[in-house]
Image (cartoon, rainbow, N blue to C red; front, side, top):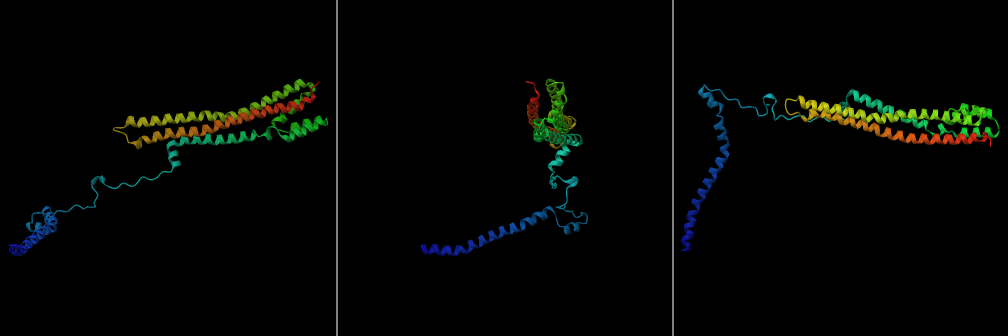
Length: 286
């Protein structure tokens, strides 16, 4: 029985192999020929169209040709990188750029000028104190007066004013020294006040630019036919932010420098009064 089954299976094996080969070959043929057949079905060859005589050959659209109207799928060039300074200058505009440049240069100039004026050697020169005291010790009052008169410092002006009024009395000399001291102190504070003024008006100018920029942005929204693009609003917003930034960037160091120099000048003026009264105290009648 087993031998018969084996014998029958041996006879059936060639038939099954032929059927399997036929199926595989047919599938391969359909796979290979399928795509050309489909293409041929969709677009018949030009030779077959020419046989009819009435049909013109269809032109296949170029795959690489751009679509009419610019084509939505066309690759856009990458945006150009803009320098930060040029972006800030463009956002500020000519008016605010010139205003902030003028304020910044003026701030630096005033700071340097007041810093040099508030130096101790310019207000209370040590050489003047030593020379004036030496002339007083030797009772050379005329030489002491000429030395103080030739010195243009704060202390020199105060001492020369006191010696001029010394003949009328010690009290009158002290009064004259105080008057000159107050006048020179006012000059120093008046020159320094411009620095404080810049520190006060710079944020106001920045706030003014903020309002101008926001008005420009809202104008774009109000006049737009549809929804405005972010790039259209960026100009006004950039102006608003950059003007505020520049106003604060100038005001913060200006106010800080103003308060530091003001305290320094007040301390030096007080020291001038103490030193001058100490030098002139020997003329006081006991």
